[in-house]
Length: 146
Image 1 (cartoon, rainbow, N blue to C red):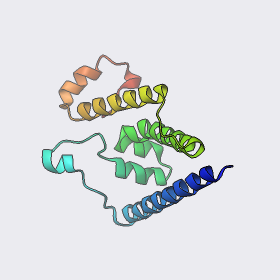
Image 2: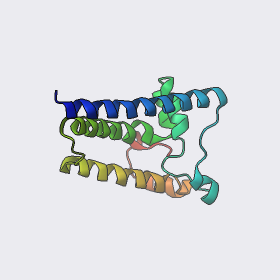
Image 3: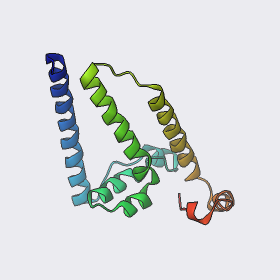
Image 4: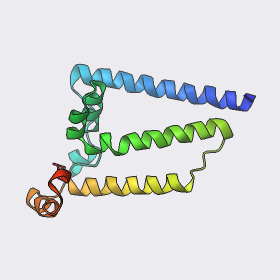
């Protein structure tokens, strides 16, 4: 292993350690107090953003409650794990090559994930009767409270 690779690995592991420590402390804070970061969209506009409920979902995940996490925010167990995988692949590529270039399949996947996130953000703010009409054409197995 070259010295450059070792240097990048140490730097990235240091960043990851800081991120994990901050996330762990935040998770402990949320578990102990029940308080999280308030949503600016909800406070200012009165609507749920695509990320509303992510803190509760993350706390549920710390208890290995996947169904609970899904009930707080559908993206927490669908899009977020894919994003984490892409970020890990990117980090490994950067450590090995020093390049942060994103390849075409990753770009396409990120684009699809962005479209899903935007659609979810819109759908979760539709009035219930309109949402029922839209989801009424979907098979029963695919319908869920957004």
